[in-house]
Image (tube, rainbow, N blue to C red; front, side):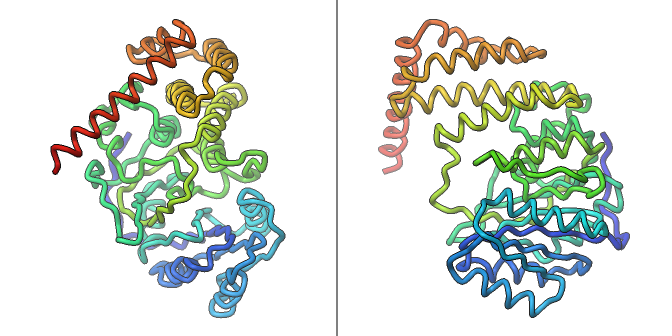
Length: 366
């Protein structure tokens, strides 16, 4: 690992910006205004209208007339993965882009987003630039007090796996513990595709898996990491992510999708760095336990018990690290092995305890 200082070197890097659009007319102007306000000008936007039935298509055409760097593709509705893949096909056909970056049509960038990324990429020659992200809602930016600013940090692709897989990175064998503590609180640490810029040559031919419903971002990112050599992490919060109330990310269906995806990575990715494999194994076990908890909340654990036992058996076959031997993991395995009734009782007691704790906090507040 190596720490780099910001550079004032100007870059001629050409960025391809992929923006899938579906019925986001309410937010679209804010998104595209942030593109036109970029201080760095060398970019082309591939805006794919995925069969929108609101005013999105009309707004996109207006911006395409306003600025020739914005190219609009209209298509029948087929999902975000297909929309992004169409853009990737066009980008590769032209073959003149240095970096590929993604922006959701209900989010926006700071005006210095591309300029900051270009400087970091030029200074370090990294294949991946990961940058800070911050959430906002109708009341404004949501500050996360746990996040800390830091100087740009240069890490390997294996270490990048740890940064972007939500593993307990304290248990990952990083050589530089100081850098580890910085990364753990970095505003760039997320599982989101939007705050990562990929150098185009290593990810040539890579596409989003159209069979995945909710984990396509994670899948693309992980496969992208296996193709790249290194990553520079900067803490500048350049991406503003809109929080919306209809998020389904905590449903048991998506927890199971995450679990199956992690298992597929362990089976199919041959050139996975060992440090990255350790991170994914930790994440896989954590998701498995979360899946059990969500099944219990929906009173489905008894019906899904055999599947959960099968997942555990599969993990035992695939894991090569000591992910099963940490105290917390051992505790969860013991609880599960004590059977359905005991596991259900455990989750019920935990849920009751959490309710009591929240009530105490509420009462003490008033």
